[in-house]
Image 1 (spheres, helix red, strand yellow):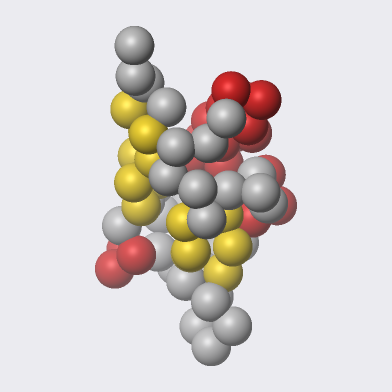
Image 2 (cartoon, one colour; image 1 turned 45 degrees about the vertical axis):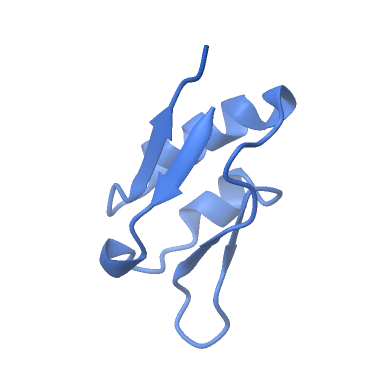
Length: 66
């Protein structure tokens, strides 16, 4: 799995951090998403999918790698 985020569209809700705190964080000054791990281990994939699903701005894009 490879993750990309569109920081310009992020609204700073923090839903991704709650769903997958090992993969996402937020900037202190404005709450914009910080991607901690663009290619997380398999045990994080379910949490990352949940984070993408609950993101109100739909800024998390996932690509499944073979």
